[in-house]
Length: 173
Length: 156
Image (cartoon, rainbow over all chains, first blue to last red; front, side, top):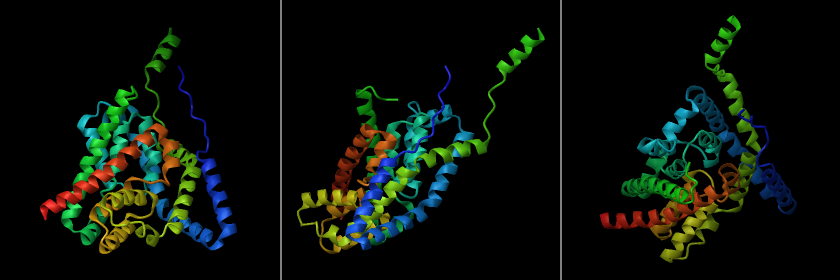
């Protein structure tokens, strides 16, 4: 059977439309707040553009060098402890907002990445290596160490629980 | 006979690997398809950052340990922005005698939960996955906040 080619379609059109309408209505009632919000949004966009570019390049490089079967073996059902550790490490070193990573994760999921590993990735992002000195400065090193440790363990448990739920529902990949 | 051999050869040859540029174009295209979704989320983040002020957030803490931990989790999920801001706000809340349970929950949910991201998460990963992930993150944020504070009290 021939593999169906994905047709191009914009996603989130209605969400964007609702947000634009909201900005418009807000502008009618309080133009100052609306303009400030727009300014903040533009600044955020400028700040995360390099992350978007990096994610596109990373996705392309991954798809070029690694076959879908290999991705499935590293992050799929049979990846074992290696998969959990990859997800944990990737979450800790990932930078930028959560939504910047959605396209890459969607791509990896399409190639067989387990849902449990996505959960691990998202939660382990709470450990921010570049921000650790600042956290130590504000809350002390014991707090930083204990919290980071619990985050990593908690991330793994959540991934495991999700897989248990999916297994019980017969949805496990 | 020769034709048959050529056909066999063609069948044996592995499919040609697409060039890097073609793959890059495909990746860019799938990212571009998601542009309205990402722009919508960025627009929402902008609105939330302007409307939900630090003063508003800190006024929600009342001094009750359990309620404050819940409030910390929920306000962290509603607020958005760089995690550095959560540390600054968390430090400020501690100085205002808000419990460490609540502050831990607040700085943790700031990164792991986001109400603003929910529409995009549903669109990309599906509603069932989003529901499970956020429920788990919510419960674990509270558990970790409690465990962290208790561990620190024991160590102290």
